[in-house]
Figure 1: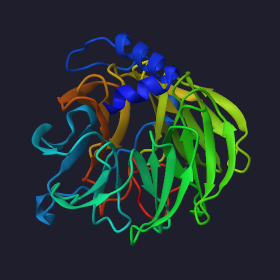
Figure 2 (figure 1 turned 180 degrees about the vertical axis):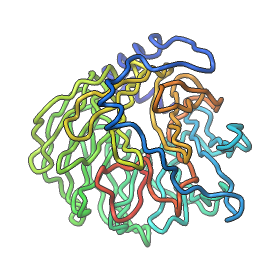
Figure 3 (figure 1 turned 90 degrees about the vertical axis):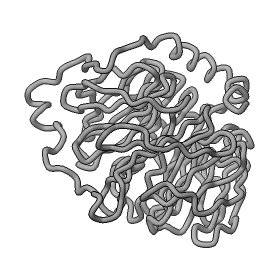
Length: 371
């Protein structure tokens, strides 16, 4: 199966995941933060008390969390209010990631080894259409909404599509295992982490030509555009690499924890969250200095996240068959059972479905969860 093939393809990933698998411990329904910030830090960086606009039954939208279960070939739909699974959508083989179309009409799910994308109604999860795409592991729409870029993890390729027509514009061979991606704010360049070559590659979106390729650290994963720099989670180590987007040069290493994976910015933009799969933690960074404010203990391989209207953080626990619903003020969390290997997650509670788990700290023109 696909996950086993990925592990065999890269010994570093296998060692990383194995260490994390045996490191996390079983917990009850609640847990708490490992460290406490200073009073000044609490005042400056605590989440906003004002709630995000919330969709309710009055506008015809059920408040749902969409959770991709990679090893169950399914998508769990969870009622955000009751935290109960209400439905499970079967797919063919092994889904991982999702993205919202620029017009917010569809939530797109990539089923990797089935070589297809599913276009779902984001209000209720109805599968509206299916489209054949080669190995759609991780993907995202450009900020201007014109391009869809798809990483073929095991096919070692990056496909660039016209987002409106789904016509293939370019296929870019890469070496090897393209994982996560992000765009420059002007949509001219896409940056792709290459797990097996420990590198990041910059690709000109219009021409499909690589601009540069640079070693950034062992098993790079999530990529975040932040204030003119690229932040890259280094899953094979314990840090986030700060990279110059013009040259690919690593300017700084920001220590987080083992298995630094993906970076997320909440709607208020006050902090950056880094999930650390192996360590079983989430580290909260000051967006100005990139210094640690605090960390939460979330055993079970914390992976992707999204933000609920009540301020809670929903985090998939990749090795614990569940989602953690985390209080960002205390670190306490409750769990919601899902299928095996929950990965991508998205909540349809956002006003007009803007991106909450955005891949840019500067808001792109077109919403793109890209999770």
